[in-house]
Length: 205
Image (cartoon, rainbow, N blue to C red; front, top):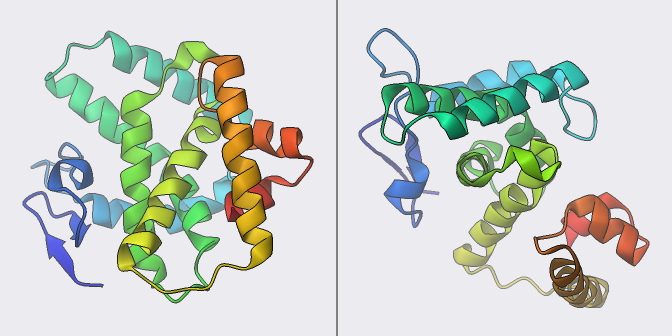
């Protein structure tokens, strides 16, 4: 994949809008440390998460407090930009965890991690800590969706097995029903419970 380096040092996969790929500047004395470097560092922190990609209870509680603080800060302030980036970095192990699920499909893991990070940034910007859903649960469908969109945008002519076609149809129906029932997009766990399948199968679809 041909990457394009944008001003902040983030490597942007071709075809992804710059405003989505570029977070605010992250730490460092001059504010120039790139998210790309942070993604590499996330590999070392990935061991801090469970096999399902969740932080421990202490981390979840701390993240929720930070999201509440983020909401209260004025838009455009340096404090909000820095806290936003802190939350992105805090959850990079989730990105790594989810990207690895697609590593055997012919794309470099680094490219998948970059694409998945776009979904993480979107999730940080949209998350409402008052909804009672933990962030990793909320972010997972968005992150996985970005990865799947990447494969679709590549235009790969892959024959989808009938089993996956049926699974996707069931997921589409269940997503619509649960969205109407709860007034929000369903979580991976809710979809798995509704269809009587594993969370891994939901992500596969």
